[in-house]
Length: 430
Ligand code: PSV
Ligand code: MN
Ligand code: MN
Image 1: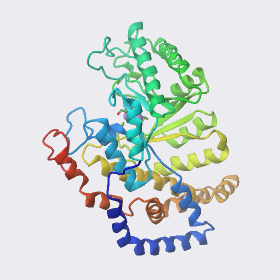
Image 2: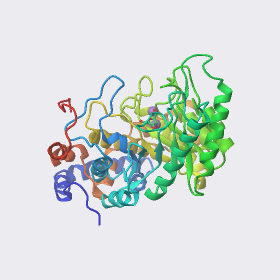
Image 3: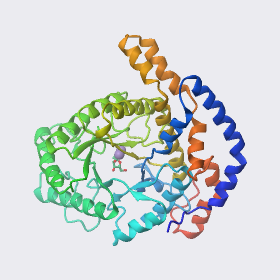
Image 4: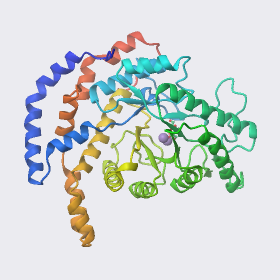
């Protein structure tokens, strides 16, 4: 039986107080869209059918390499993380799946963990392996690389870990394995750039062979960090080459923070899809590098342009389009639940705006080389405030019209501060 963490009555009560204002805004937006030939209900249905997975690791306070400042009541294990993720989903109704990371989320009974998640209204999304850190008791260190290490025993350990992640994922009901490695170099000459890629292909092919038929291996590229001279899977080029070598179940995963500044990520989306290799996303935002800031907080326009390409991709080849959408953020100065609620809303808003694009007008303007009209077609959609559509879809699904206000009213974090293990001083700015 599903037992959601917050009082549904309280959410309904808060919604009732805001329902008239929302109906008013929704009706007004409906009239505006009707003048543009768009049925607001169709957009609302699209929004209602959209979801994005949240990362188990995003439920705790992240940190930087300088410090981590926990907040009182933050979760300290996967069970508490699931409960917090369930709060996000109960209020937002857009995040019904959790993406776990191993060994961080290791437990002894995964069937029980799956049941626990289900009882909270959650399922599991892509499992993430971790060979970018050493774990206590591990026989071999990843200090000189993991899947690409010179030492065959190190490589085998990293391969075995990924295969174990697949096994755990099967028990959890997942169907994707996301592989990001930190392997690379800090000095010119440190490693042979070609041979390290060959070692990657060899190791990855062994993981690939262990994938069940209906699974995908999502290869996540990243330009730099922790390696600062070269990274083995540094960009979408290396990623797609590896995915093409490995086979049809291998796809590329785009983390929005993993590119050089100003790279045209929406174009990468178009390219990967064109060759059947777009596997998934890690949503976040960034100003400088892999900042892992909240989605849409810095560059919401880019997020919209990414979704614009995703919708083009979906319409061009609907049969082969099922990217895994996930959030991957580090919440350093906010309550992670609030950040995930706000981020999910930004992502859904970008999707809704992209649904509003008049595609016939866009394609006609492109055909006619009418640059300004093509751009204005995107502009018109981007400028539209879709807040009432999102709020209506949320409320209709049992979520909150104003999700952050409802979360604050619930007193969840204060209660957890009493119940959960104390971590740090917990007096940060919230
Ligand atoms: C690496 O920067 C990354 O984006 C990968 O997705 C990891 O799994 C995650 O961050 C860990 O926080
Ligand atoms: Mn990522
Ligand atoms: Mn990252």
